[in-house]
Image 1 (cartoon, rainbow, N blue to C red):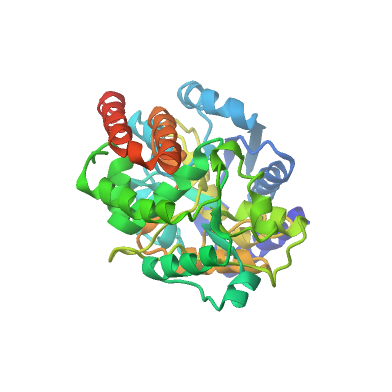
Image 2: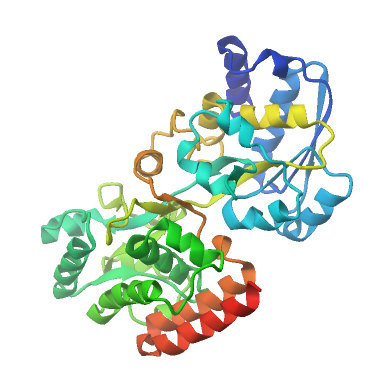
Length: 416
């Protein structure tokens, strides 16, 4: 199905002018190295390569697929020795080491001259030092997934402010339920809560300054974030003993109605459906506003980049333009492809309630910026130390001063 879809997209691109005359004259060989090694993503990248090859008779497209986990340790060597033309990776701070080392090509001119329309909402995730270093090709939303039927039973509506969120939570607690399920055994879910509490309390720009080591963990701003978070902890909003559960093991609390909501990525929806909840029982809303800041969102984003050592940069740039075009974005992110969100705001989305809501939110109401999630935005060592502290805070909030001092000591050491 995917191959037919992208063939149709390619044909449409050729007839509607999405492919420029310069692109039509591509020649030589273009090499792609990709970590899209799981079956569905592999079909996507192989289909993209095949279709792009077919669009350009004088161009030969070669694809090398590497293991997703192995790629994390191989990418630097691949970019320095016989670099490919195109590689795939991740946005924001995860690309910073390769930008800093001069291994990714600056493609700011493509954004400036209109080669990449429809990417305004995700442009920031590919921006470092005011320049753009790649393109996104898929992402997915985070937000609050909740039991719509229980909200109706309790007379609650979706909150838009943190005060409304807490008022709802009190009603839920009074009904004998918990407000939120979470499984923090493997730490990263606590990172999601911090991301949203910090972006809503201090704004996206401050959150990114913290991620890049420019802001202090002992600052008044960070303390304000934890003070807001503690309001929920002190209310008893979270399930008990969440540090003993994985994120999947915490889902039954929502399924059974013992907790009404879960701050999580859209990947949780199939699990909720498989557990027996219908779309009449579950719904989604954007994490509510706290301070007067544009709304930033967590939306982990996968990306393509042109290697600075590429031999066929003209073809590589054309491929990036192709893969972000409306029709290709619609096809590869559809239900027969990645089943995620297209990054082009003009693309169409799958006929799925949550995909549609996520696309609307990220395309139109994420004006603060798109974050990549705690363990992608922060350097790996800082993310590890940080998430340990975040989980500890959720269990022992009185340890906050000690936690923040430890994280600040880690910041001064790691970013140096």
